Image (cartoon, rainbow, N blue to C red; front, side):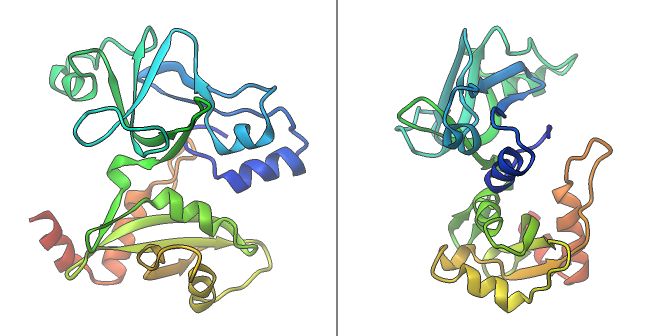
Length: 242
């Protein structure tokens, strides 16, 4: 498994069902090779499946808020890193480089994360994927992690759709486990009382597969485009981008 975050529930299944007791997670980007953080094979199962480990040697990591300041432990923000692993820049693209790496040499990954008191990090989503529904922030990764706990769900992807009244609404594409069936009401009832009401998907669609790249990365923008077209949300999309 590589190239995208792996849900905690799937990690647990790999450890147990595929007999990989020492499986670890590493986190990095092309711009910060080889990796930023890594868990150890000696770490507890909880540390190895629920986090992406701690900072590697000679690597600095911090979590910053919207104002650029470092946030307190446990608070969500953008993960930044600095050190030998950070690229010099994008080839012949100085403006793109300046957007990614600040004057102090910190690479802004665009990934949302939290840092625990033990120094281990947890990736909570992508900054650009955040959904703002009626003024409330909804992080797709959080909703996906919850829905993965449903016994009938094999895979799920959550995206934001344009909404004329709320700004954005929450939509989920769900792939059920083989032989299972479910209804939209059943999924929403599973959510009620367990996650905030504004995080419960307004739109649900059961699918057999997700649009993917040749390397296996799910293309969420295609999911969003398909939903906008099918649900005739073009006008709301125009308003959103105006």
